[in-house]
Length: 103
Image (cartoon, rainbow, N blue to C red; front, side, top):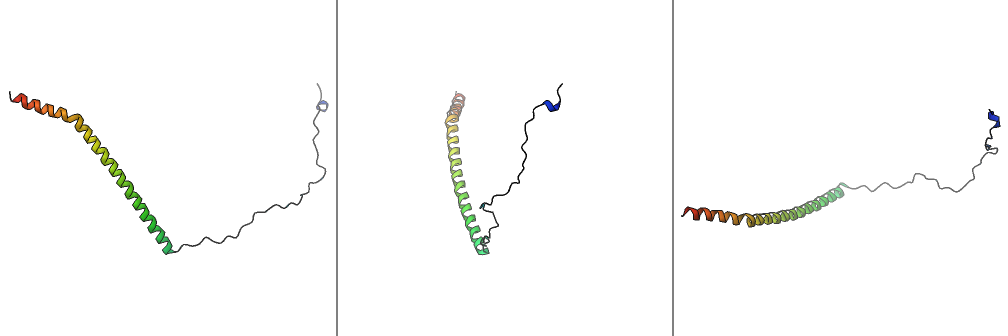
């Protein structure tokens, strides 16, 4: 068997000289001094709240109105279809019952 000394090993590079930093102009992030956000007054807050409430209620009213019209149209169509389907048989049955009893 061969010993570990006989195996060829890759040469490991050794750092002889210390690495020195090369000065560069690198921007450094710093805390920016931003002005504080503008404070909203109570009157402004109340005004925005009232406008949002009004617009929301108007939208809800319009949506409900359209929904009611759609439901009404669907119900009218459903009743009309059922009358078209069931009324002839109902009329026939009543006529037969009344005409048969007259004999």
